[in-house]
Amino acid sequence: IKKITTNTLQKMKSSGEKISMITAYDFSFAKMFDAAGIDVILVGDSASNVMAGHETTLPITLDQMIYHAQSVVRGVDRCLVVVDLPFGSYQGNSREALNSAIKVMKETGGHAIKLEGGENEVESIKRIVNSGVPVMGHLGLTPQSIYKFGTYNVRAKEAAEAEQLKKDALLLQEAGCFALVLEKIPAQLAAEVTASLHIPTIGIGAGGACDGQVLVMHDMLGINASFKPRFLRTYLDLESQINGAVQQYIADVKSSDFPNEHEQY
Ligand code: KIV
Ligand code: NA
Image (cartoon, rainbow, N blue to C red):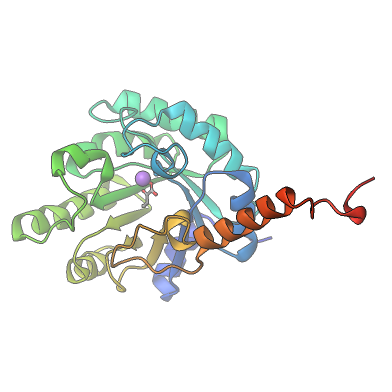
């Protein structure tokens, strides 16, 4: 098996092959996504929402992220596994950021970490990269800052924020990031950022010019059927399929149809 590395992603940008990334939080789904040939699995702090049921990504802890990442890594043979550093495990303290990154790498077997933010995080990113840990950046809508933004609306529509984002992207590249997630920004801005960088950009709600795309697994599989932002394409309607399957199971139990004589010892 040819394993995907950060170098592979760099080559994909150079050759124009798009990078496919999806989130996963457990062994079973990670195994299926890896077998399907996905390039990158992100153990996202969106686990706080889709796994734990919190309204934001803020409550999830480093140890909870580590549990998810350990489970994912056990399911993967080939793809690159990137693990989010959660809120409170890195902001404003490069020593703590380094400790968190090292803890994730030692305890999970993941291949890289991701953290949110621009200029403010440059010192931490440099320190983590210097320790030998690859870092993926994340700009635009950064959900750990939801209480600063106030909404999950598109970011950087105004010139000032767009200029800051372009500047941040270059700073993150300079700091040593191997790739950048661009979340919910205008497609034109994402295209300009992508063209200005030699490292790949991976978009979510950031248009088709990015070097790759990422979606949250629950969203693209239709497990979150009520979540329908414009950027999302759903590939399955799992919520209704699972509802139907479980209703059928209930009916079969109630009617004593299940188990039948072949389904017992
Ligand atoms: O946590 C997450 O799922 C993410 C992606 C949406 C990029 O950070
Ligand atoms: Na995240």
